[in-house]
Image 1: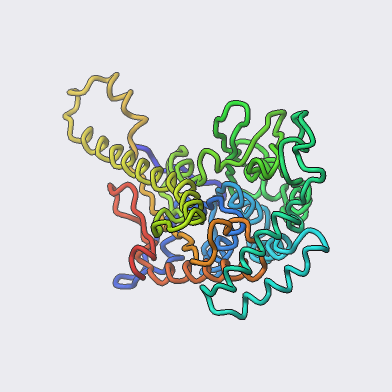
Image 2 (image 1 turned 30 degrees about the horizontal axis):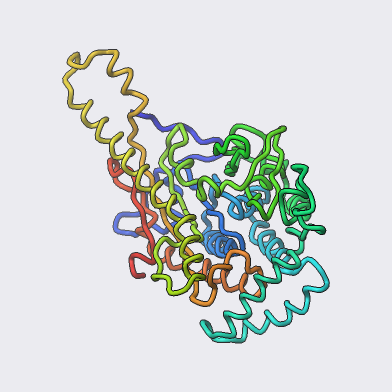
Length: 408
């Protein structure tokens, strides 16, 4: 069987609460060897992840591993690259920055979008204001994030960034360098993993602080969604957004070795479930939801099946009498054995009816605050279910909890 491996800078606690007492989520979290926060890509919806982390932080739970793709990679880098007491502050500073238009001509949109905070949800005017924020992002860019290229890329054909993307992300690089302490990120024992797609081969790759030094370009590469944003060079190779291949790092976290008892807080921004489309715009929104959420469901199911198989194989070999199994076969099976358990607390943003297919680039400040508050509320409701966080029984392999599917 796979043995427990020590975790640098952190020890799993086996202390149990007093008999009859229900352990708090924090007490349960301390029993895991790893606590991982896994953040999906989803553009402007990423503020939801910040609310989730804020509630988690209030509960005293400090992840030892941050993993993300696209906007999830940016949020993860800010979290991993700051002292715990500054993380929420830095997230808020980032989102307040990027939810302002890049040019002065866009500021009238801010005044109009501010009306949204005074409206009841799901009104036609609310939908119109969300659309206005999205079109403002397309036309003017977002402060500290991206700016439109003038002239547009159709004027070039030389393979340069100006020829292959509509926006310049140099402002995002400067923002990351200001808000993320990359020296701390690479030195304090908190792990960061971000996914990106190799442009030339189409292969997926994770940049992982456990193996290499993470730099701003690794984070930029994970969020370089074409054709809006240019490919980013990392060590001489060009990369695009990891969401082109896999929009969530969940499978990477669960399959990394050595395997450890892990509490995974998985925060998705796209829901696989949704109403049937009634218009072409509904079709575009539904297509995005399915495209960016389906790999999460598929990955969870596959990892759970493999872990159950590992556990069953270990139990089977325990029952084979000594000497009845060829030494060569036992040695061949040994790497597949594992009795670790993985507990996935799954949080999924539930889109509002008025957000429509442009919800991932509607960067209005009022919309951002709404997403943030919803994430905080969903995490608090999950924390109100302490049974979600308890270490699973050995042999279960993978268990999943979701406050929405539980009807909580």
